[in-house]
Length: 258
Image (cartoon, rainbow, N blue to C red; front, side, top):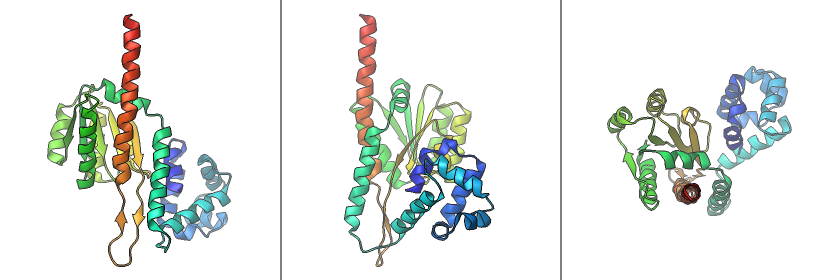
């Protein structure tokens, strides 16, 4: 998906690129059928800037950018395809991504942390936080969870640079979450964001970020359903990566003592 490419290459993007991201995201269906000249005219971004934007996303040019746009539009459109197969395919792709991602920096932050605090912005996110807390007890790492904003603000007041805070948010763009994140960074406290796969303010502010994709299951008879299983899968894989990292660190420490 185009959003995944944007997240992957986010650090390369300038203000014009981010504006173009927002314009395309807001007018995705329309943009998928525009020529580069038409997109330049409608977005007020030059043709050469649009080409450079595509290249920053590791695409060969505008035609390939349009392919991604059309795929995104197709995925968002309710269809008669086997929804279960699509969701399961998303899980398989995400697991491979989790498996191949280098999490050494995040593992080091957790390993060296005096205390680890988790703040969740909703009920599903709170469940993920509790699961993270439960799993890391197996690695003898205690995690403190917080769900209420008032309680979390107290945690920010007592947390220090030797601690780590993990914020779990679906959108990563709620004003309340961003305000808390800014406070955390002003105090110099290490911050890890866990959000769904999209460009968002929380991930940008954080020292490190983890992303879990979601799939929207469209329905004509009830509200659309957004999957969340990948958030829970991520906690499991992160625990395994952490245990392997911890084992390596303790092995290195033992060799130095000898």
